Structure formats: structure tokens, C-alpha cells
Image 1 (cartoon, one colour):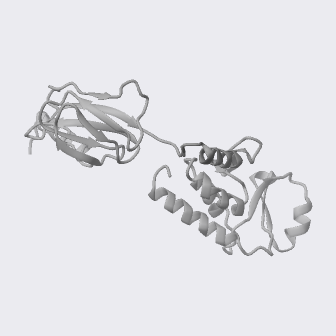
Image 2: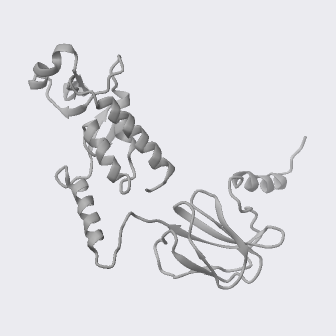
Image 3: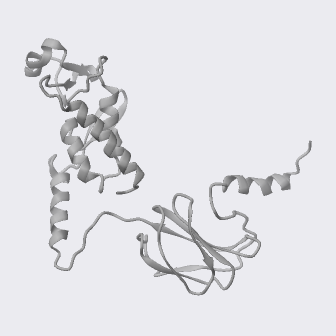
Length: 255
């Protein structure tokens, strides 16, 4: 069976754009679209914007995840509120045959904030954020290298890290690293380590205190030490809570 090159070129865009709700055939834009207000690096969710230049057809707006969240008859200006997932959005004008006759892209982003009339709650939120970001001498995270991977931690105790996640999940994009680390280093009998700190290969206080039943372990050539206070029974609980917190956060992108 012989397939013509022209036929292949017609098929490929449809395959590549299969996840989108907007057809990807673009037979030369006959409409020049612009978005207002202009001159912005990004727009925010629920912000009202207007598309200009769409004289006829159907306007379809696709979010950063490739899902269409708006499909209406075109008009000029076309005023709407931004929705959907963060990222690069595309507003396209389709003709009666579903062919794209014009499009405009715009970035959508946001951050967690509160603005109230007197600024009292805004100050409270800012103070809370500063407390979380400043705990480690003005560094929001510290890192541990293990088996050629660098893991980010808010606090390198699973208990404190899990508590910090409850607030930082609204500000920080990476929540999974510390969970991965404690899962990767889990002891053979299922025990989760409580924390991990720099150490030297020589014996130290924690070897004397917790070494009687393997509640300490050296990693990274002896320069990191995993520790677990055997009397503390909440470690596995907070590991599972961290898993749950991360799962809920993944279901609601960017908090």
C-alpha cells in the first residue's frame, strides 16, 4: 500500500493535537487577534480580558493542560474570564468547517495571596510565609544528596517537614522530594527513618545513643547519618500524612 507524502502531512497534525479540543488545521490566518489589556507578562485566573479581531465564527479557549474551557460565538470584542489550568492558553477562532482562522496565545499564572481592605490578613499571611521560608537561616529548603539524586527538604525531619508542607504547599512547587527520600531509605523491616543529618565517619553521640539496635545508619560514604528515636511512634504516621498531603496537592495544581 502506497501512502502519499501529502496525505501523511494531513494526518500528523490531527494525531499530534488529538488531546486538544481545537482542530489543528490552520489554512492561513485570516484574522489577526489581540488580547487586552496588553503589555502583561501573564494573566491571572478569573481575570477578565477581551479578545479583539474576531468578526465571525466560534471562539475556543484552551488552557495550559490542553483542555478547552470556553466555546462561544465570536464577537468583537469578546470578553471573558480566564479559567482552566495554569500555563500557556490559546484563544482560537474557528470557521463553520472547524478550521482555525486566527489565534492568540497568552500566559496564565498566579501565586497565593490575600488582599483585604485594611491589610491585616495580608500582613498575617506574609508573616506566616516568612516564618516558613526563614526557618533555615533565610533558605526555604535544604538539600540532601543520595545515590546521585538531590532531594529538597523544608526540614529534614519527617515530622517537621510534614507539618511545614501544610503551609508551603500553597507556595512551593516541589513537595515530593522528601517523601521519595524517606521511601528510598526505608529500613528493610519497613521502619521509616526520622531524620538525616551531616556527620563524619567517626562514631558520634547518636551512635552511642541509638546504635544498640540499628537505629542509626551511615550513607553517602559515612558523611550523612540516618537516625530514628525508637521511642517515637509517630514517624510512619507522618510519612503517610505527607503522602496524603502531596496527593491532595497534586489534585489541585499550584494550591
